Image 1 (cartoon, one colour):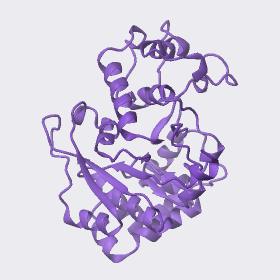
Image 2 (tube, helix red, strand yellow):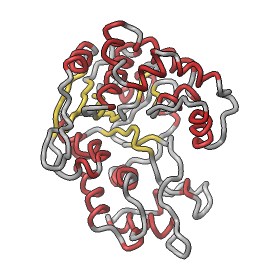
Image 3 (cartoon, rainbow, N blue to C red):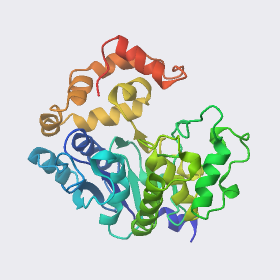
Length: 333
């Protein structure tokens, strides 16, 4: 398959939502896709878990205002059954939702994502899965006298019969976290959600229930999805994203996470898209019910946060940004 045919390949987009915060974020995601990619040829799925015994509260979306806006922006709400995770690990939704999709090439994005540019500039190769590198060295957490990065990661590759050596970035030093294949699960893609979802679920369930002994002291909540993800990607012939995917977490998508952080550090172009798509009255009427949108966007507090920081000289650590915003009484989530 040539690079041109890869780039022209049609694919679907999926994000997970449920009642509460994620339903408001889903509207913003859908609105931004429509605004920046009006000719997107695929389908946008908002996957919602069905209520069931693994949920403490009903996760389904019933708000007619939310559902109406999602429909207006071309999103299709699909439900999926929760069999493995639920309330104890809601991040598992991004694993289980894949079973509800048509078996066509897909891009998963976290709901706290906006589209800021044309997707046809991204060089997807759906036969080679990849995922976001917008991450920090959050896992594993090394213990004094405990196993190191090599032992921990190799035990997982061995557990699933995978080649550990070919997953390494040998330009990075031994026992440095970036040497090891590790992603943010904020976006990932593949040619088959059925195959990817089954592999992702299998690995996550084994790690949760029958992990190698090297993981005995390791926290898996909330990191389980990000532990299983590189193993699933490597097993399917994928790896780190190349420059052809730079638009993701770049000029094409923005994983904003929280609105105070978004206003503190993201680009002027991303801020312009967000404020443009949230401005129409029919959108404002529904989304102002969500406090972060109300305070940061509609009451203008985001502009105050933005004025506090120089995007060309941000504090090195995210926690420093968070602490400064909190000291000014402008943190909201």
